[in-house]
Length: 160
Image 1 (cartoon, rainbow, N blue to C red):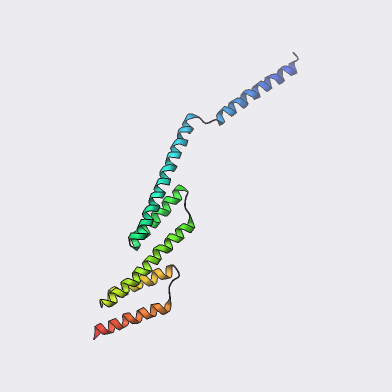
Image 2: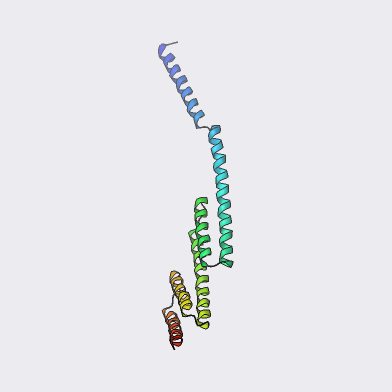
């Protein structure tokens, strides 16, 4: 065999061995396979947490007050982000529902304390109504002024 052919053969054989080693390293070794299983388990747990947080949020929107609902909304947002399932549109929808519920409850609260002749409590409800209505762009200045007049007339009546 000619020396040049011999060197070519050795180089080709060496390249084949090198390619075989490279291809063998790209396969998934057992340690990485376990991490993949651990990652799947972790993702499953994150998904479960997001689903549970969503259920708790929906329940809070039905039954709980504003602050409990706000906490549930934030917990759901974090859980959904971690699970990779966060939907900003859904978040805004839930947020709006929460604030609308608070606006309605604050208005009822205001009316109740006006009937009870409690200026301070009615004022607290009115301020909550105003802040939460502004948060979802439902604030109406004329309605607010009407409430302020009711509040002032209650204050005047109490002063007499």
